[in-house]
Image (cartoon, rainbow, N blue to C red):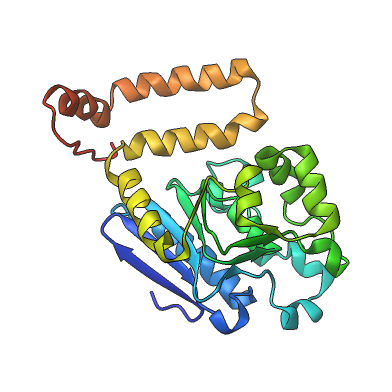
Length: 270
């Protein structure tokens, strides 16, 4: 598929999606927003892809919504039907909305944060499964400085990632946070030199795609994103049901076999 404002590149089991408006710090437009959703869907449905990397071209990850579009954005656009279409009817309604569809894709999403991640850029990073940042990355909610509010569920997501106190600070002040502080508060899991980011993320994505069962990853991703809505008993019930299926799976047989035979795994995802 041809894209206008992003680059989709599949290399082996890893799909890399690069927001490609470097002259505008990869700020979102309606075109880019729609293309991003299509690209995530494309990677999620491709049986050869086992991990997805999301990053930005140039010096930014994503600086939020393009100000030219934001200035003339109709208020009701926030909940327009075109943005609320179902991603996967087997998933929670919570993960069917304009940006919360990242958790609904069965493949792990790694945000490689190469620069500024502000506003909606931060929202997208939070809905990813992993966040690895360049030491030059910077983060800001930005909403309060634009006269806006905590959009797209960030008031629910951010405290779960960094805790209530940090989330309150970041949302109400809209101050910028550098990579070191982001690491300290748990907003990102790793910080690397800018020149190493692409290689480090590629190595991590490949390991995630080949060293572990894609079936296990798929199921555990769903367990993790379902857990906030479950009691402990409900989480255990789901785990018990999934354990029975796992023990009957091809990947379980291969998991035991490659360990016993002391060789690299050849998981199929089934």
